[in-house]
Length: 181
Figure 1: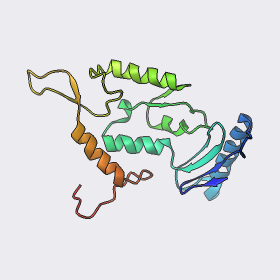
Figure 2: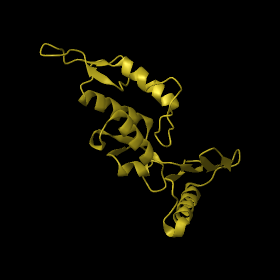
Figure 3: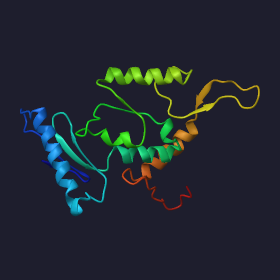
Figure 4: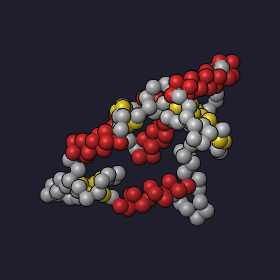
């Protein structure tokens, strides 16, 4: 067992494997035990128990919480959010994301690449030099402006600074002395 600050994992000994069925059974038992807490109401914190393919993990928080924090932080509604993942069964770590946005279930990194390229093509992202453009803004303004989209590097820099002081489990931003933002 490995214990971390906000998670605990059951991993095999070196040079051994745990069958997938045993990993799934471990996850289902942990989920059931946790749901029995507080008179059957479950734990007071969101959690995720999942089969990692070779191991089992129980994390404080889950992808539902993570997606909601990102939606709030970026100001993007659920209908404009898409979660791409590979573990949407109740023993997977992507399962909770289904509650807060549409999801695409993939089976390989190649499928992820295909999905992202398809989305960028549909979004008519013209700058092919950057593999992913997280923040786009129109290049022109007003009536004669261009329809081409450009990356807003100032906004990326601002958000990167905020991420350094954000608690990723709660979404709260800690105030740094002398910082007005």
